[in-house]
Length: 496
Image 1 (spheres, one colour):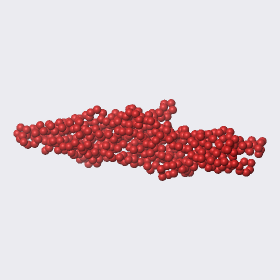
Image 2 (cartoon, one colour; image 1 turned 30 degrees about the vertical axis):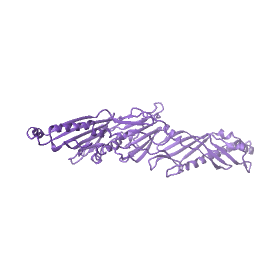
Image 3 (cartoon, one colour; image 1 turned 60 degrees about the vertical axis):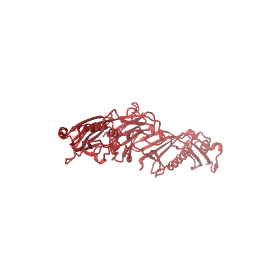
């Protein structure tokens, strides 16, 4: 597999910090006013913040830089020159400026959502308040408190510096304590208090069979300037984040992403969970092939014979249909289906061998929200070969009432070929990749900027490998190695 793209996971989304900033800026980190008390002061603090920047630090840290412009501290009482005294209204208001940096751990929740945890645990989250000192020291209240230190010993400059540092620490602590209290009590719906969901689990495309592709497990990896969210489906086994790299277009000057997001649908997910699953749709709208008929070691491979009925209803003189082989792959340009089958005539009078080569294109849909359009790339290539038993020709001249007439056989061959080209069988094949089409909002939730899909959707990657796997061949005692004719290409969607 192209492990640098998917790491063995089925569906992935890479989100740059710029897109994550847009999502986070929808959250309000403003609270108060809340009472505070320090060694010399009491009052209330209202901390208003704006998220200015987001930084991701491997392996699992989210760092928010918040501007506190708009915050207010109202000092009600202060201890100065001995007794506690009320603060006059004209000097009670402090409007601090500066920043708060919050460094907190990221994790995937049991519901497969990406969340940042602000619940106090050990030293987490790390909250650092950087005050603009002038915004505090230039206020009348600060001037009065510092004058107290000067009056006690005007010649002792060190005493003044100590008083200055202590005063700044009191205001810094007031802001920090209030912010800690707010983070620990964030409104949320997660089991743990103070957990903020950044990316809910996505809804994955379902196959035309209606089987929902539920997420079985998830993980994430932080890359330079981005995070990759990784999901394994109901039939997938997951993988390892270790080999995963970036799929975003990046600036040659800074190395930072210039795309809004990238989505990877793995080769296995497309072939196994979308197309192979679609084969199970019963006739007349589908081919009705049971999942158990497919090889377990390949996402989309069947080695027959598998005898079944003719989709779309019986064709005169044809009693059954045999699937000899079905094979799927992504050839670098399209999704390909190679189907070999045989129509069996009554009494063994004839058989019609057929091969179908169907190619599906995956293209970007217009506008926003982002969407992809999947459909047949041109007309499927169909080849048929009619084989008539020798005794049929003999019966035509000698025993005209034995077996089907030759005209009936030729008519059946025409009907069958028509079904392969533009009849019920062709229609069922055309709908197999339908689950891939549609709109992508990934991850779901508010705050995402308007994104569109960058043409072209990639169906070929330079790091895709050629897969060798073991197949069970009917009649042979042991599996045999088989080299996949198609490279293990993924479907990669880049959003801008």
